[in-house]
Image 1 (cartoon, rainbow, N blue to C red):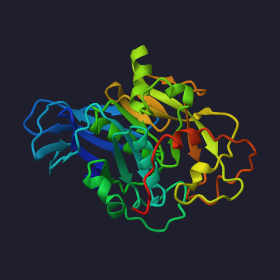
Image 2 (cartoon, rainbow, N blue to C red):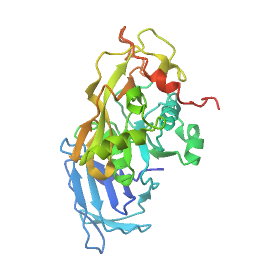
Image 3 (cartoon, rainbow, N blue to C red):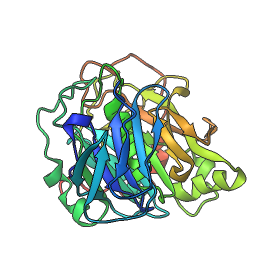
Image 4 (cartoon, rainbow, N blue to C red):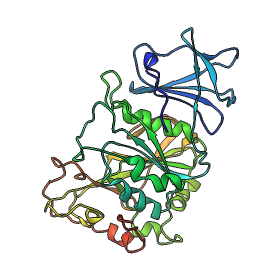
Length: 337
């Protein structure tokens, strides 16, 4: 799918969400907030502004899902056909932005699908003008690489050619991607906002009483015990390829060198979208509060070195092979199939 880009107003997408709201998403600019209405209606747009100046989200709750609408932006009439994304009500989904990561995206999907993730929303950033880290890969073709998963309804692929970093709005490429998912899939149960070198690693004590490795059921147990939760935050543990081991295919999952601590500074979240209005990479900006999951029971393995040859080579003799327990319980498909 292609996002709707309106250059003049730096609008990144316009879409009807699964609640019937009309949503407009922009990175932060000095000219905002815009005065936006739908022509000949009395329902105005609310707007949500990231307090860290990353982005704006404009929402119209008219619940009119017409094929085309006449928007009035700062007095100018623009006729647009808003996008429509899949309805993923009550699903556990994961959303990520990638740039030139074809060597590793299927592994990430296969692993988390085996843990019970029901849908993946991939924002393809290959045509963006800049990025923070340079991938080892020089080309990308996710449309063909993920064709079967797209055809099967497992993956939604969105062309997202926007800069990861802008001078006035920081890491807006990623924050707009995250808020796009939160607003497009409002009726989803959980949205995991992780990168494709990050693998959720619940410890055996966390799932020993569950019927298999079911992330949704494990997350439900925490949410049912607590109210007013915007997200569940999971600590990060960095893994290093200290000994230059093979990291092709699934081999990197057998690299156990890591840091000692599991920290929340780089923590990532499973967001409850109906309880969050704005999110920014590692935190809820506007919405109900986050809850930190016990890092002894939950963390994710961040394989810092994947496709990034100049990082993640730190020397470490600390080993953590706990993910191997999960790998004995799941069947990862052959990447050559």
